Image (tube, rainbow, N blue to C red; front, side, top):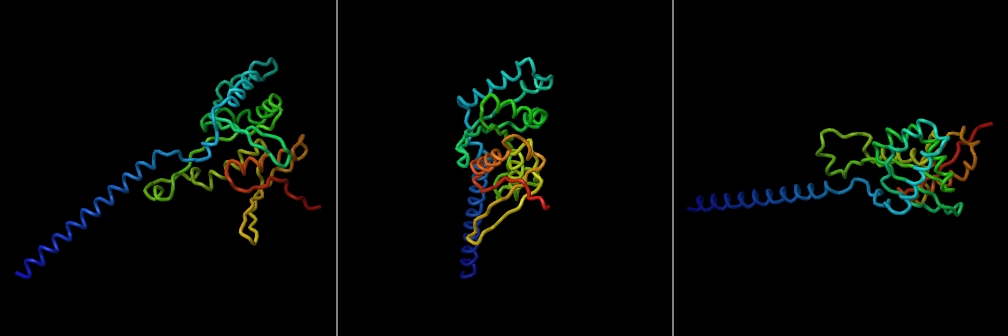
Length: 231
């Protein structure tokens, strides 16, 4: 009789454990489905489709319709899409910069071909520094990464941050970077821009704009500067 009662008790315990584990697994799967619908990059929320976006689109239309516009301008500019815009104040200069968010497909297929000249024309129209950044996908948090078989390297956080770092200073190139950690734990990223662009007009002022935009979008400290040349 004692053996039968002990066996019945064991079977009841097994049943409760199984039902508990099933409920936990169901709850985790439901949470994963709920999280998967969120936007991957929080910085996209900082951009809005407002009057500034309409103003930039008008600038693009004016550049396209000018008689001096090159044939590649007239073919590429109509295909460029703008997901949103944002104004960033540069405290070092007291001026404002315009940051435009471009969808990845439009950025890779059209903006890259006319990037330097397009920024120059937009800055003439707006009388402000203009920066074009790509709307890049970002992998979700680590809990979901473990469930994926293939993980695109260019969608990981470090790769996306490096891409935004390069987008901000386009058409200039990044030739090096260095992370400086002070004693109090603060980190400052020093980004070296191609010294061949040093002779460009108001380039020193633009470096301050790059640093301010990086801080505003990514909430990280970065200093854009030209590398020191040894004499």
